[in-house]
Amino acid sequence: MKKLVSLSLACALLSASALSIAAPIGDKIKTAMASDIRTQAELERDRNRKPVQTLEFFGLEDNMSVVELIPGGGWYTKLLVPALSESGEYYAAIGTGRIKETLSDVAGFEKMKVIAEDASSFREEGARNYSLKATTLGVKDVDMVLTFRNYHNFGEQGRRKMNELAFEALKPGGIYGVVDHTARHMEPSNDSNRRRIDPVMAIKEIQEAGFVMVDYSSMHYKEDDELEYEVGARSVSGNTDRWTIKFIKPKN
Image (cartoon, rainbow, N blue to C red; front, top):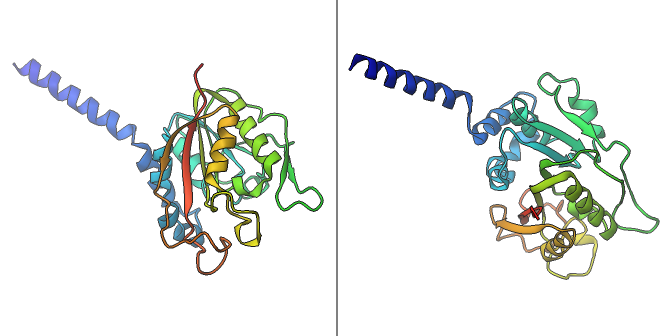
C-alpha cells in the first residue's frame, strides 16, 4: 500500500512539474506584456488590441515557427519573440528595419530572425498604396504567418504578392492570420478610408491565393465606429472596428 501511495504521489509531483514548465501560451504572452522593454504607449494599447485573445484565436502555440509580416515598430514582436523563445521560432519579414535596429541587441531577442531582407515596398508614381517586390520569404513549412493592420497599406499587386509569399512559406495545414481596419464593402477609395480595407475583398483575394477561410472573430468589432473617418482621426483613433480572420493552407 505504501508503495502504491508513493508511486501516486510521485506521478502527481511529476504532473505538477510538467504543468509548471509548460505554461499555457496565454500565460507566456501575459508575461511578455509585463516586460519592462515595452513603452507606456505600447502598454496603453493592450486593452484595445487584446493580444492574448487574438493570438489564442489564431491558435498560436509556443513550439510553432511563426513569420510576422511587416512588424513595424515591433508591438507584436515584443510579445511573440518571448512567447516562442524556448521551443519555437520567430521570423520577421518585410519592413523589418525598425525592429532590427531596436531589438536585435536586446537580451532575450537573440533568437529573433530577420528574413527576406531583399524584399521592398514602394509606391508607383501617382499610386495611393504600396506595391511589393519580393520573390520568396526564404523559409518553408512554417506553422503560422501573421500580419497586423498592414493589408490596407498595399494596392492589389502588393496584397496579392503578400498572400502568395505567405502561402509559399506555410506548411500544409499552416495558419495565416490577418487583422485590419474595416472599410465599407465596395466603397470607392477616398482620403477617409485610405487606411481601411474591405474584409469581403480581402477574403476573396486571400482565397484566390489558395487559402481556405476557417474562422472569424468579432473581438475587435466596434459598434460606434461608423467606418466614416480615417483611422487616425481623433473620433476613432484607438477605437477602430477591425476584422480578425483566420485562414489555413489546405493539406491537399
